[in-house]
Image (tube, rainbow, N blue to C red):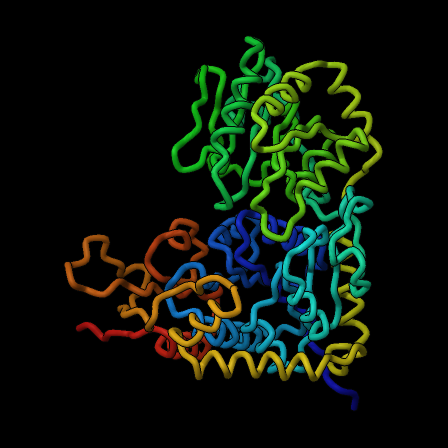
Length: 485
């Protein structure tokens, strides 16, 4: 009798990131997968609540940036969480979309030899960034690189790594048809008969974009016929001076924005992967203002290449006169026509389907049971040694080591956080003074809960009683749980 066929269940895991990029790419893959694969999500992004809109099940795991536990303990916590999640879901593969595979992720990978691990690794890394994370490719069964329409301008370390399978571009446009202009305008709250500019200059929490955002909005509104929609991320903490508010609309919680691009005539956008491929593949004439604080992502190189190719306009974030001048060019119908024509041949993205096909081949070829690509034992030893050293050094010793290695300060408190384990339904918004904060147990993909300041232990809906018990044990291992009566 033959060996039992492994499950087709795939875990789509994402890093925290600074916006919606990692989560959106994994959503593209999920939408392209066969129904019987029933993908499940494991996300470090507090934006994971959007998955509920697509009826996908998943689980939120707090990132180390939440500061709810010492960083040296967080990696063990992540490994425990991922191992438990894979066991509960019976998954045969884990696909991680993120720049840096965390030590905890790599430890879980080592401890799950019969589970295939795939790294979805965006290209266009900036010159001069740390390349040590690229060594982690040796622990993955495959590395998939989402295609980039500006890939000819990529001169970073991933361009010559030679370890990745190149996919077509990955974008929600593969699965979403923009709705008609009148319907899209109604949803965004704008007049469908006026020309409309979209201003979306930053994703998440990277930096402050008030100055270029204000410059772009004001340059659009110089023409009394135009109106502007501004994403909340472009407003920053202090808010963006919108000028004539009768012609400005702030967008909050609109996802996916790609669905409503039919209402947009031009865009002023950062040059991140997702924004570029949504806007240009949809044929929206776009001014790209690259974000210089975008970590490994070489937005400046991507924007310059696309501008040289005639597919977009380009201005530097610090050059406000340049931003205004290029926005004025966007208002010129002839310029818009040229940009749209240059993008007309891009076609519909197909990277999600290509990724799903590669995953199907990986599972179908039984590589899950006996990996065709041998993993690096040296890299496994490095992961084990680093985690063991962090445990021995503790938070203070690790902080000293990071300083010596010029890695910058770690995150999280110096000791486990005191908490009370409570069900979501039992959370008291008016808790008494002196009480430790609640550690909320919940199986609801509630965006407000996930983004709140109190720690949360979220678990996938429909979880078994055994899994729930294991999650309580994990929580007690990494928090100082106070049993308040």
